[in-house]
Image (cartoon, rainbow, N blue to C red; front, side, top):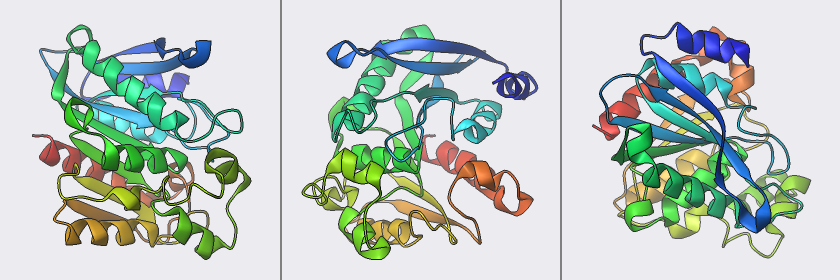
Length: 262
């Protein structure tokens, strides 16, 4: 990913990019992350990034690279993580892996010059589903300061009704009997961290209503959330890169994180 390093090198904030750091080994399977740490005094706010891929494919350098430069340029540290994939690993394995990554960042906060009170989580597609669930259920010191969900599935029962059937990746991850238990919507409560939902209106894989439906329920419970609509956008920040009209989300994402984690 040379172009990522080049973009980071040209950013307003210089950053040290560290690759392939093992943060957990569940069942003897090493899970790694890449870390971008701003230079300077700190401690820095941090974002843990979770990739998409339908729960069955992808890694820490796929689907999510468009998110790296705006975070780096804004002075955020970020950690892009791998997690266990279906069909060999089912729910809640990726949730446990995100928790392990969060614990790793907390434990090594001094080494990476991270502010432990300003750690957000961010994910796209399957990663959005994972961060939404984790954000709705995490407690205590493992509760993130903020959650950014890019077009994640928030309600699996609604998703099944909308699409007629669940994808092979989804069924291999959660099975058909775990729909409610695996849905972030099930765990909405007042003391959730603030959520920013970012979703394209022409998403054919995860219908747009997932995001406003969950935000509406959060607001009814007294939680804090916002939906940023990307008008006409399909599924995936990668495809969004091809159209300048879809790029406003980057400015919104950074400004919202700064305001929420001030």
